[in-house]
Amino acid sequence: MTTARSATQRLIYGHAQLHDCLAFADANTAAEEAAEITALAAARTWGEARQVQMTHLWNPAGPDSYEPEDGYADDKPFTLNEVSSVVEGDWPPMVTERGLELLPVDLQAQFGKRKFTAHNGDYLEIPLDHETELVAELRRRGYKVTRDDELINVLDGRSFSPMA
Image (cartoon, rainbow, N blue to C red):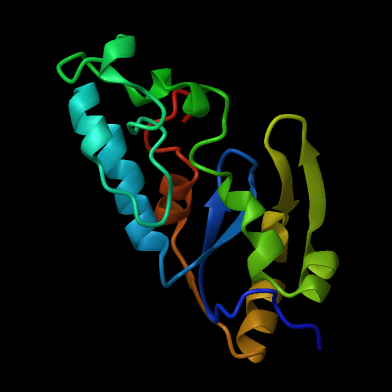
């Protein structure tokens, strides 16, 4: 039996709307990551955006990326969909790419297909109709697996994306 490259044994999964397939995330950190995404999306000014603390992700509006003296004053209105790394699809990272690290390699090959995107790298496409079989096999191998479509899509940026 092939093991996952990550020690994660608790997974959240769901229907990732952007790629219309199943996606998986580490249940130990998924809710905290989603809270970081939601907090940044809720910022109303660049000052608020710069202050959002990130533990699991990086802040694409942080002081390392945008300086007040470059036209991003603290009181200037902030819209997450105008941040270059968000516009380019680099933030948040595609939730569908996580399966490449979280799932055992043999199950990736059996239930999914590695797909390439020109701008954002590879992701694992797992058709929705493989859900029952894949989840049963993960559970048989000792994984605790919980479905949460909303959380998966927040992790994918669907809560603020104009494409949502």
